Structure formats: C-alpha cells, structure tokens
Image (cartoon, rainbow, N blue to C red; front, side, top):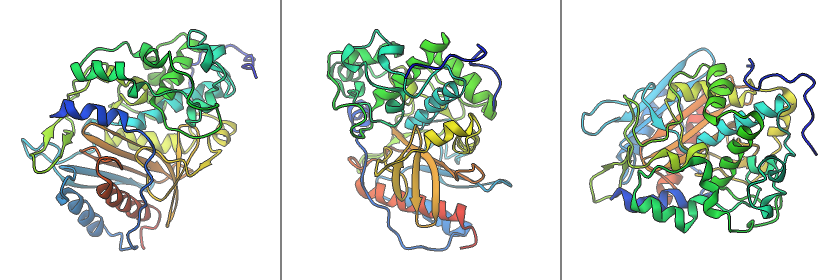
Length: 398
C-alpha cells in the first residue's frame, strides 16, 4: 500500500529515542552458513570464559585477538585474549575501533524502521515507488523484503565487473550510491517474498530508499537517528580505507604463512550501507542494547521487525538456531533467546546480541575472517564459544 501521509510533516531527524587475492572470497562468500554449535554445557565463570578465548587465539588459523563485552544492565565486564596489534603486542580494548562488517546492516535497519515509525516510509513501499531509476524488473520488491533478505535482488558484490575493479585496486573509490548498477542488467533471482537469500544489495537499496524519502544523506541519517539517540561517539561510516586510531588490527591468518595485517586493504566505499561502518566494542554494546530493545521506534514497528523466518541464518551463522527478522536475527541457544546480527569481512568477524528487552548484551569481536566456506571447523568452534558466552550472560551463576 502507499505510504500514509503524516498527520504533521515533521523532520525525520527529530528527537526520539596476499590480501588482495582474498578479496573475492571475503565479499562473494555471503550465502548463509549452516554449521551447528555443539559443545557440552560448562561453567561460565570468568576464568572459564577466559580459557575459551585463549583457546580460540591458539587454534591454527584463529584470530590474533578476541574481545567480548558482556553487559548485565548494571555494568560491563570485558574478556579478551591475544593482541590488538601483533607488531606492538598491545592488548585489545573496548575503545579500539574495528570494522563491524555486516552488523552494519542492523544500522540501515535502524534508520529505515525509524522512518517507518515516523511515517516517511512504509514496509510495503516498493522500489518502483521510491527508487524508479532502478530496473523495472525489480519494481515490486518492498522495503520489508529488503530488510529480511527475501527480495531476490542479485548481489552486486558477486558481480564480475565489480570484483574486477576491486581486484585491480582494492582501494578504488566507488560511487557508493551506484553500487547496484553492477547488477542492473540482471533479473531478480526469485519471486520477491518467496524465499530467503542473504544479499549485500538489499541494504544498499534500503539506504537509498531512506535518502529518497528524506532528501538527506544516509550518513547524516545515521548520525541523527542512530548515533545521537543511543550515545554512539566512536562510530562512523568512512569512504576510504584508513582506520581511526587506536584500532583492532584485522589479519589474514592462513598457516603456515605468518598473519598478514589487512586492516587497511579495502576502501569502504565499495560496501557502504551493507558493511562499511567502523565502531568500537563499547559503542556496539550501546547500539545493540538500544536496537534489540526497541528504543528507536514504537512497539508496532518492533512487532513487525520480529516476524521471524525460521532457519534463516545471518552470515556467518550466529549461536544456536537462527531465524531472520527485519535487519535483526533471533538466536535460540540452549540457555535462552537473544536478538542481534553477525558479520564478517577481511580481517574481522563480529557478533552483537542482546535480550529482547535490551537489558543484557554481548559484543564479540575476533580479528580474522571466519566463515563456513573458508574455515568451517573454526566457525563451529567460534559458535560454540559464543553460545557459552550467551549462557554466561543469561545464566551467570550456572
């Protein structure tokens, strides 16, 4: 249906709460993983959690550094292992910057759903209505389908023309708002709404829709609708390849070769709203508590966001059984349910999760890319450890 006309036309920004050879792999391997998590329940003391992170760092192909922030509503505890920088030996910090990879998709969801709440967008708005310059064949795709990855849009990050440019120059400056042009000649992969398929194109289209209805750059929408209401002070969406200091260095870990620092290999202009945000564990903790807890929009929008697609996994899959909502996933673990998002990119693997009321949260960051296709055994181990951390969050005395 068409977007309802707001009763009062207010500003949408108003107050309310060898590395290059890996680029094709890290951008194109985006199909949902299906590995299972499965270690026996164990103690969740700080010492036990510390031991699990130490073991991850020691595992062949494992991350040089891992940091987890658990917040129970009264305060945070930080568990970390390894180093933030192999050159200096500095330990990871909750205020180190990092590439948040596809957890950035939750930020585009936060922007879009905030605009739905303000009646600038409807979940039933179509690409034909809001972005008529895009191919007519894509016109029936709705905002809802973009947000829950049932759109059928072809993934621009798999397009040969895009990948050829990236391989020739990983720091190439793309026009972020024209990324969908790389697949403009392709039909939809399936009838919109008929099945789930994770695609980077979806969140590019979400950001473009938000810009179209507000006539405001996506970067400013992030600032006004997400960063400011949630108190995020160390989060940004850069266009280049440089990292703000200090930062968690991301590594390609491919034994027997020594780890290679790939933190500043890729230009973020080529991922933009789909995965380009830089943040810190401290800021991501603030974000997921507000986002999963529904602080950015009203309960009617929260209800729509939590219409789950069973078995639809994030990339990489999160702990326990996965189900997809609108730019958020439900992770059903042996100890209970948390909501959040995962992500992976060259040098980084991320999980952010919180209880549905936002009172308890987990931010879990590793400094190498871990996927089902590249390191299936390590992903199984990672998911098992993440599930143990969720249990420590939900049942601290267990």
